Length: 221
Ligand code: 3PG
Image (cartoon, rainbow, N blue to C red; front, side):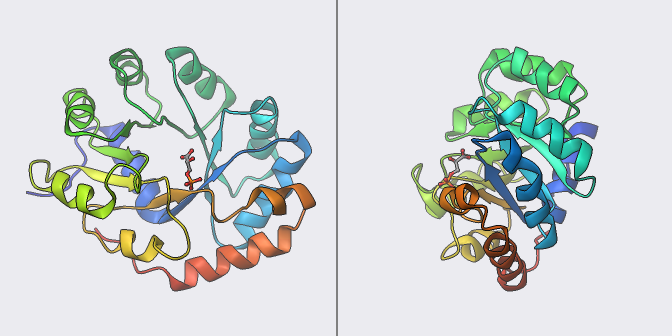
């Protein structure tokens, strides 16, 4: 059995994650932080970003990054409803990410041509996503949902599924997660701490990204 994607959209998200290896999860409080933050990440070799729809500034910041930082591959996260998904599409996000996988959201995503990374934490979540053609999934919250032991347990009955674990991942354990054969990339907020965003310490963010990209193992195929 292989981990070959089973749909075109899945193929896109699989390719993006495989190339990225690390996807920073960004919570942007001030619109004006978006562009310098994205530039700092790209300068550090981290191009694929998830901007969460958790703040009032998120949409305007995403719009600015999409138009002013062409080297960034901008995905939009914390997509909870079909309306959120439509918003990602109209914003020009390259992909959408959800912490979960409700039937309503999965159905809307299956109808859309937007690449979508649904969140799963159990075998049943995974089966709901897989039934609609999604085989590349976010394992969230990864550490809190059983960590690597859970990931390995899921690999048994679901050998075709590929995952992007997110939640509780940082510099100390990212490489371990990435060494798992069913992990394409890891996500998390650790590359850009809120305090550094607040103080505009872009150089520290770039340096941390460079270090991470140097030290992480080569991606699995
Ligand atoms: C997410 O929203 O995907 C997580 O909150 C990121 O988790 P972390 O802050 O533990 O990296």
